[in-house]
Image (cartoon, rainbow, N blue to C red; front, side):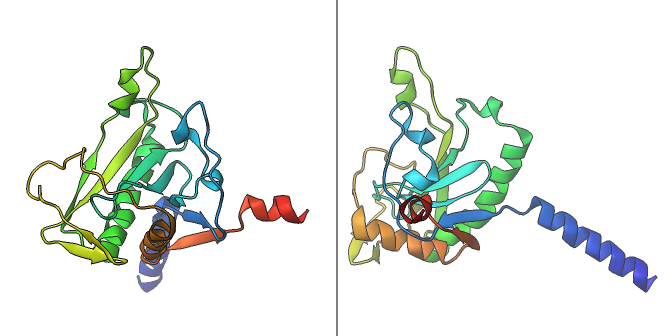
Amino acid sequence: MKCISCGFLFILLFLRDLTAVEFYAYEEDVPNRFNEACILCTPSHQYEATIAFTKHWKLTYWRNQAYLGRALITSQRHFGTYEEMTDEEAQEYREILRVFLPAIQQASGAAHFNVAYLMNQAYREETPDPHFHWHVIPRYAEPCTFADEQFEDPDFGNSFDFCRKQYLEGEFQKKAIKVIRSFMNIHYLLSLIFFSTRF
């Protein structure tokens, strides 16, 4: 009976590992080389605001930090609607939220989150071709400070204000990304720049 229980436990642990999301990031800074046709199609090794990436998704810092820790979760492949998401993409997205939201919360002290599927700007075009992504908006019950910057959430308890602006990039961005990553189990990779400059 003891052996059967041990074997069953091993199977459960093995199955858990099969469904676990693997997060990756590059060790070195990467340059911005945006995809001109669709900026959200820009691969992680060409976008310095990447926090981490998985098989199906990219997690990126959003330069408008009116809500400290604001980020995007963007699909790796180009598709436009929730209905087009595969079961595997949906499962991975769910697992990402279980890791990513607590990491931001630990890094920033957010009270809770709004996670929004908007896609509005794409439909301003005559022929819309949206790239599927989610906005992650941390919400704060009290004012807070991070890296000597002050943050407030005057709309706490109501919908977030998409028009509020507080653009922070450069060293602030690097520090924010580093702190969020410290609360995630990330596999670090050598940047493709490493190979292109050394071989």
